[in-house]
Image 1: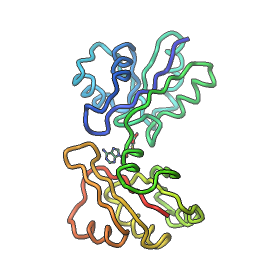
Image 2: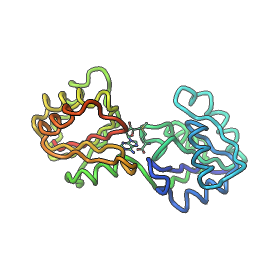
Image 3: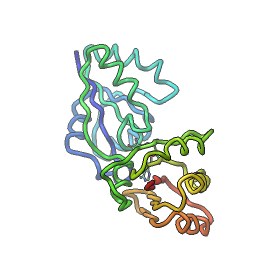
Length: 221
Ligand code: SAM
């Protein structure tokens, strides 16, 4: 039996990849990736050549898993996503679970993820935190209300810039004027942390015509 390697890739700055991640990508023949074009850019940057790229993205997970499991009987496979750590709001866990059920070893490499970068950069307490991923699009307020009993906890939320302001309104309605941080474009040229009380941060965001790029929202209940 071969091995599945779970390999984190940069969330922006291409230098944020570990030596071990590069070693694994160099060593394996097959790479399962969310978007083959994105992975090709990364491989070209590191002059890693001759790999067979297999599409593994969300709507295709069910059909691709049996193929990958078949391949893993005799070949190592690396799993990458478009950015950051596979399995963190990205495809990954279904394949990992299936490998474990089939007795296939899984080796997870530590590496870049927006979640911990934003959490630590927020300046909010890190002793106890809950990662919410992308909150549900429907029933969002009720979802936050159910979390209200978690006191002295820092929450980390992935959100699209389009929905950010609406989510901030809901957090204000449920949690009040809490400490918040909007971490934007982490590790990229326009990296920015907007920190402060929720009302002030909302005003700052409202003043801007658009808020582009990727964002993580961190708040303290
Ligand atoms: N697997 C990734 C990880 O480990 O962070 C997350 C992938 S998820 C599809 C994409 C979301 O992650 C974005 O909507 C944003 O909330 C967050 N994200 C990813 N890269 C980011 C960055 N450079 N700056 C801010 N947020 C980022």
